[in-house]
Image (cartoon, rainbow, N blue to C red; front, top):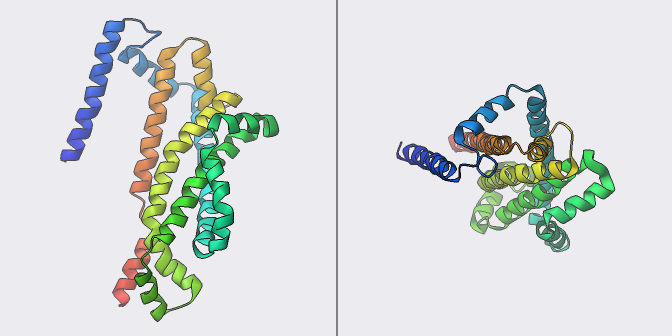
Length: 252
């Protein structure tokens, strides 16, 4: 309850500061008033084009995150068990993490065009996070825990599902949470630069060109809410591995 109260107080303070500053500035182009942004926010859900933009952006994020999770998880596990693979592959992942997003977006736009670029850039930016989260989690497992399990069952796949995955599940969930925040930012930026049809990025661009800054703020608030909703869903998701652990404990 205390945390919830502090969160509400923090949000209320931010809105209060917004109201005061907007009254001082008194210029809707520089800083729209809260009621203007709220009205624009409601109008988003009244427009068919806006709803399609939200739907397609979420779909692109899910596809990019799903592919990045599959490849990042699988290759992270391989690197965790095979040191030679990690030595060869880790520099590639480091390059993906260090290359400026704007540079790689422009390159992908030239090569793949505006339709595929948002998917590819989302995958390339999220894959390193999930890969390194999985790889690092496996390397951080205490050797004593692995030795205990090997005494009971030394099969790779049973060890993977009953020992390794339960131990690294928390790290994977953290990687997914980080990926959601970064994924929305990167995806919308790619949509903005590539002018992808039916996208939040394109809606932001149109709002900026038409000097509708209340709409720009409204879309920004919507992106924040989307990120928070996805984060809550992941936080409340109970991985299958937790059920496995409980089942194993009952059998002991």
